[in-house]
Length: 341
Image (tube, rainbow, N blue to C red; front, side, top):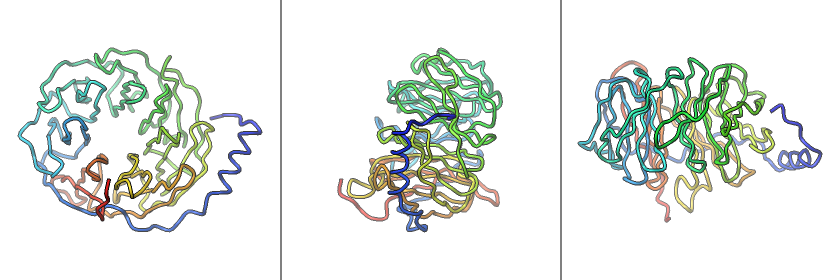
């Protein structure tokens, strides 16, 4: 951020840099394809959401929200809404939140039944992303067309404040303590927002990262994971605003990211971040809070437009649109070996 580091902070950074090994070559991707589920010919999948309460997966495709069991079986419940669903989230009350492109609104749905409970119109521009900070209990909606990010009450949808950021905004992440981070592909930065007053708090420069888009956060270790269009993943110390790890990731154009602890079981990785691009999904293993390594990638037959980690089932769900045309499909990936939990 245009942040000034104290002498003590600089010493900490130096230690971190010195203990980091060089980026490893791509190893074995930890998930394998378990099942491919055909979808209706209704276009790309815009969102995939895991609900830990119902242990079901919600998939947004066109105007529809479809419901699946963890086995990949399609459940009879579905909901057709008034406009294209572009993002899904889950609030602290367990409700499913859907952001609609036109009409621009947030729709609150009952989990399991997907019954519409209420709607809230949006006046901040066409929504492009929705993020619920579970620890901070804050809900944000982003309009990339207008540059607005609005904080909403997660239960009523009432606007609580907004900030306008110049540039090309991407994925959002929060630290659970009132700070929101947003990638900015036009400036190669992370924009930092104080979510209380919804004001810009600064920017974190991302050196050697072209057009950052994907973003995920480990709120325990206070690490931000940034996917860059030039085939790199950066690990950023959120407290210092300093990039201390750069890993090469094949494929480039990392557009979405998700982080979870123990994504392949308690005896597997300590943590992992998975990044989706137009041709592949890549993995980064967290071995410790200061040690990470690239763990290969899995080639895809088309563009991955949405992803969701399901740690309890050791699964990764992808929405994949074939390059040569044809209907989208769900790819259900699972850990390559069985781990005791």
